[in-house]
Picture: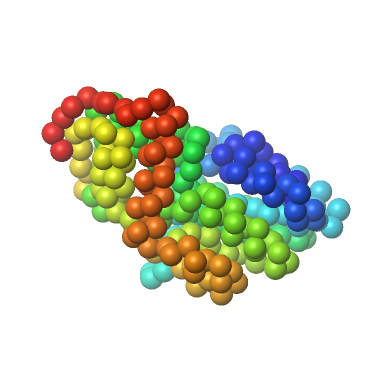
Length: 260
């Protein structure tokens, strides 16, 4: 596998570089769900167009990473499914959907993966868990009461990608997520406890949640059943995240004390 990019996902994909030699993984571009930079969107569009043209000419498969988060499925009635019509509800979601359509029309062999919220060491500061950790360390964290997020360990994502590519799927779109969403209030509670922090919670009556369908993923990759997705899975990966964070910073982190 050739990997385009050097960010969080690209680094985690490196164990696959000696496998799937006919695949180009485009692990670069916009990864900030709340970002709305037209310049960044344009750069990613140009990169995808150029990479798809090269793959079509070389007869290689392009692995493209889209999103299964709120921006894509937030308005879905029932679980978000790959084959159902989608109405994105954020500029980021609309951008990713437009890129999917560009790739489908490019003539390049491809596989599109719509990802949940990845969890793992050394995530970019703008992603969900590092953002919450930063706010906790500052002593106050903003919590949307109604929000919930589908979390999945990036190591499990890489293992699933390896198995999906072995199937030689063509022109398919697959959700790669846990299939269940954890309330953001619970995520914050577990981060706070695991990091030994105290902070003021600033609640906002906002936020959305949705369920990502993983029926197609389970049918294609029975290995997924062994991952035991659900509430216990989310608790485990959050515990792994906080242990790694504490270890990387030399011990427990202490923030501003406040009232929860």
